[in-house]
Amino acid sequence: MDKGDIEVLRNKIAALESRIDLLETEFSYLNRILIDCGFANGIETLKMTVEEVISEKLDLPSMKINEEEEL
Image (cartoon, rainbow, N blue to C red; front, side):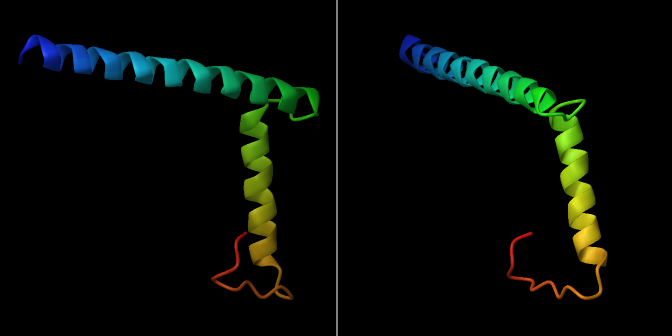
């Protein structure tokens, strides 16, 4: 591996680290505003709530779920 290849890899690593920092910041912000909106454990509580709503929707006999329909 020559110096050019190493520099390319370092640049890719730096770009990925930057993206991780951005995603961690966004995750923390989203988690905080969800907690402020009443989801006790933030994203974790939101996920559980959405899974419950989807499960209840699928359990309702009066609702016909079209496979092409998004939940």
